[in-house]
Amino acid sequence: MEDKQIKKFIQEYSLKHIAMIMDGNGRWAQKRDLKRTEGHKEGALRVVEIAEACSDFGVEVISLYAFSTENWKRPISEVKAIFDLLNKFITEYLDRLHENNAKIVIMGDISKLNIVNQTAINHAMNKTKNNTGLIINIGINYGAKDELLRASKKIIDDVQNNKIFIEEMDENTISKYLDTKGLPDIDLLIRTGGDQRLSNFMLYQLAYAELLFIDTLWPDFNKDILKDCIVEFLKRDRRYGGLNE
Ligand code: FPP
Image (cartoon, rainbow, N blue to C red; front, side, top):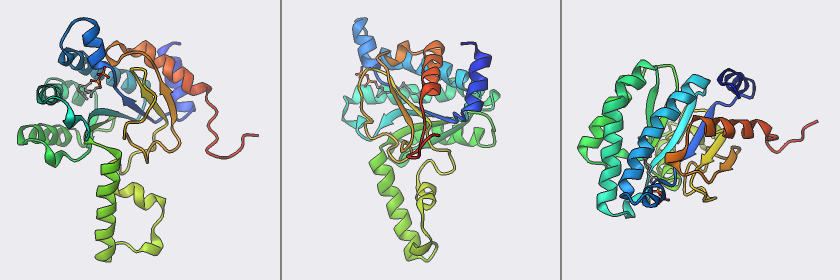
């Protein structure tokens, strides 16, 4: 399908928020007798390309799972390589993303990162905070259970301090305490790498998302495969628990 057509459908079907679990970097590298970190490196390049494609298509938000609360269990060398890549991504591509009017936001508890990484992340968020184009929401030290725990603690704190009242709380209240405050719910989740699970990713925000699990390894993901995923999304009948006449 032509890019123009995809763009038109994205508006028509109100596809605002695409989330991606970028799995398969390690296997991609191992298949080529490369170190796993080479897979992450190639994966980071795909992030730039996919962000630019989504921006061209008029998608409002992409959410990317870069580093989970569970990923600390990996060898220290791999953890370091992923954070080095994130830093590199931010320093090398920040100007390009900024020129494209993209806004970088982070979900997850970055207070646990070292100061170099925190500074780079805060710089990227500050520099792009007034941009009005694609929002690139990156999960770093992110886990949905941790997000819900942090949100619950903040809610309890605000209730105790009479900032909010239990009787007035509704589902929107909870959304406002999540890391994704202000972002639309997810319309489409794409998980590459063949596994069919959510791995503690955005469990609340995925409530009514269409789920797409594909075998392509993340470093092999590209604009054409993204377009195929969007076409698949267009075929889905989204009823939100209701009935379609
Ligand atoms: C999963 O593949 C991927 C990760 C845990 C890291 C994702 C990180 C990047 C793509 C690089 C930096 C990110 C940004 C946003 C610039 P895996 O290692 O679990 O692969 P496997 O299942 O084949 O082992």
